[in-house]
Length: 312
Image 1 (cartoon, rainbow, N blue to C red):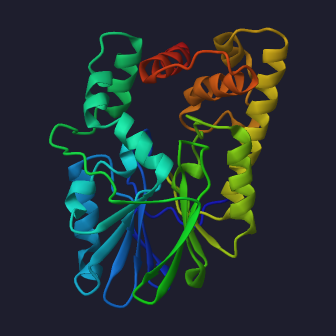
Image 2 (cartoon, one colour):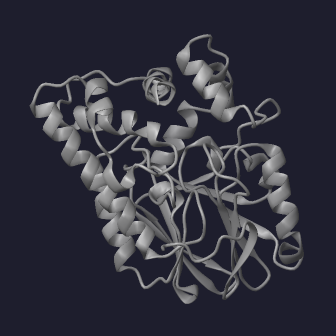
Image 3 (tube, rainbow, N blue to C red):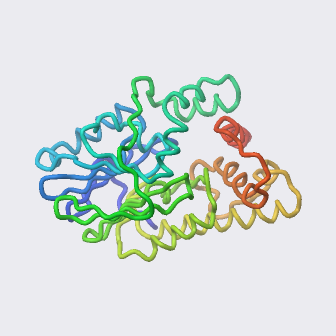
């Protein structure tokens, strides 16, 4: 078993580190983290709507009363990791350059438009995101970007930010706290759920997995799922390798993308939640192998996943 703890809500990790673990699984139910130092704290990600973010900040309030949040790191540009930024507007908000580009492309207005579509993509999106309220969100973008790596001092605690993307998205930041032997991975790690390769390349994500495995870290806080260990990183790596191999073989055989997604057998990965993400992952492999293939927009990708989801 890769899981360290099944606890949800505020989870103490030791050495001034905390995780915020979503109370239920599924699309958009993301995790966050808090690194406390002398007189200040760093928040890793906000959540998908204001209600969720307020609940998290209230739970952290006993800690941040004496160590206020001075810095926020958005690990990437998917809304479930930054739509709550307006509630921490007083802090410096940092993201990788690629993450900022994604945030500018897809914000709450685009998500409202997607879930309002009267087609299979919209119906699927409404089904998985209907629990969230995006109506009052005022998009607050990061006010500081970085490239590659940067090191922060959070009240005497060293925090390393490493952009390992493009992989899951255009920019994917892992947050490493060496003293605590802890890493907050954003969506480079999904624990007990299917990873989704929105951007790729697969090779970049696999390299990120190897980087994580090489860190002096015992505790892994994934973007989704329970607090875990490096075993979850190995499981993600193995899933990505399997899907890439299976999709590439079908590409070579001339099989259309969705035929390939329906044909692939996931073996030991079949029980992972949100298995419909395979449709996006296969599409990403095909575009890597043939860059002339036109990219699908958000509705197109959700339409492909809807086809797999409702077929199952």
